[in-house]
Image 1 (spheres, one colour):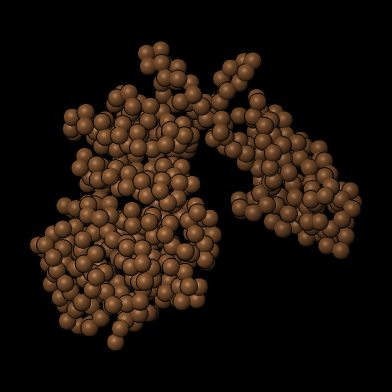
Image 2 (cartoon, helix red, strand yellow; image 1 turned 30 degrees about the vertical axis):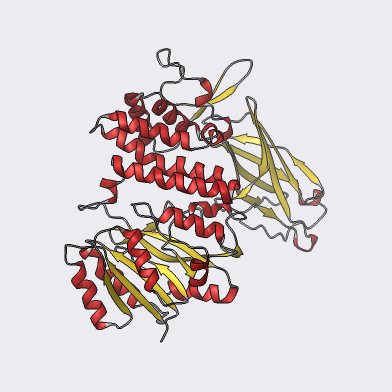
Length: 480
């Protein structure tokens, strides 16, 4: 019988992890699958593990090739796959039991071309958030597209997904050779899909390996590895420039956030002649849009500036400064008549280095923090206690204004300061004249920085709301 789903698993010298991966596939609640195992020239005991599974479970099929890498191995398996849907799993990872049932079920329901879901990192047997995917699946949505949900630019992996087989073949998708074969295919699939389903459920456990001959940590900052990463980045940029240029800035920003870290780590090691690494780093910057380089966070701009000038010892000092900050580095004001706000980083206005002030400019990184910590009935009035501060600015805000609004009217409140960041205000509910809901808005001003926004509900992400049930003055429902 033709299986519903084909799962492709290439493997190369992963004997310690392969059994756990294959057990997770055998335990899928969607049992109408075939698992195509591709031995990419392993020289350890991995093939014996795969042979045992294929002998015990007819859904597992084993094929082999000489060591060509995961891309060609996956392509060979796709050519032999029979399922109406395709999925990919790496041989050292784990797939949760209901993952493929959830993904295939959504595709059958919506008709989308691919479905993707959340990822957790598997670290020493414990699950942690995947930093790469952490912002992607917070707001799941069906029948969407990367040009509408641009957060999908961060979804650069192929193994947290299920694809329609006819979509894969119609678009001519295939994996390139090399280490970073995932990223070009994942981006092409997102752009070429008619619609995509985003699931909030965790569908993949991505293992973090820190030891061994093929440790990711050991290899990702090697010069040859970095060159292949740049090749993948250039490939994706060329594709986006042709098919979805509106995504280029977002992709470039992600490269600056994630990929350049490995280049910095290589330069920090100091094990090789830095010349080739510096040349490669400049090639990376040349490959990205100048607008994105200029709009990068200030500390990253400083690192890139030092990289561009070949100032390696200074770059290492800034990297050490970054690691040594348990909290984010401060943003501080400079100037008397005209105040500008800069990152409080090493080498600011160094006479020797003469780094332009705009490299340190962090005004756009300052954000308003405003929350209601309590709202209590005193017997005659309600008393609000709020926290108002600027993110990364360690200074008391001298001018704070508060008012309640129901969307049509504004009721100003008298704000009184309590401590460094505390604000207290009282109000008689009779002044409101309506049930609401009412929200609390704040305006804060400090040396040319002016912000206005809604107060949040404590540590929650939602706006604080105040309502007067039945227009009562004393029987109030105060959501906390």
